[in-house]
Length: 143
Image (cartoon, helix red, strand yellow):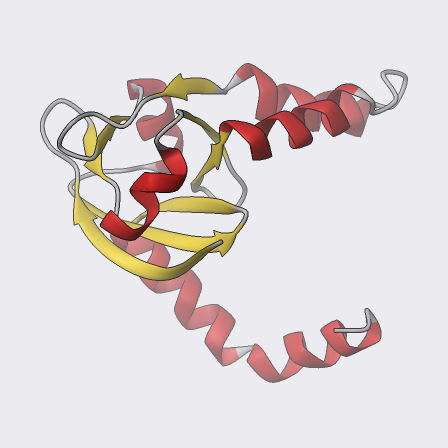
C-alpha cells in the first residue's frame, strides 16, 4: 500500500529517487504513464496489469473509452528502480506533467502520483479549501 507525501528532486537526466519505503514494492519493475490533473501515475507491474485489462475491455465504440485508453496505455513506459533507488522518467512524460526540479511523490494506495511541486501545492490548496463539499459528495457514494 502506497501512502504519504514526499518531496524529491529530478536530476538533469530525468531520474527521480523513489521514497525508500516504496522501493521494495517496485523491485520487480513498474509502469509510469500519463495521469489525471497534470500528474504522472506510477504502478507496480501487478497493479498495472489489472488496470490495463480493464482498459482493454472498454467498449471501442465509445469515444470516451477510446480516448481514456489512449491516454493511459499509449503513454505508458516500463521503468526499473536502479541501485540508487531511482527511476528514469521519459522526457515526454516529464513534459506532460510539467515536471521541473522539485517533485512531489504522493502515495495513493495502489499507485504513486508524481507531481510538479508548484502544481501539487496549488492542487492541494484548492482541494483542502473544498474539503467540506468533497466530503459531502463522498458521503453520497458511501464513503
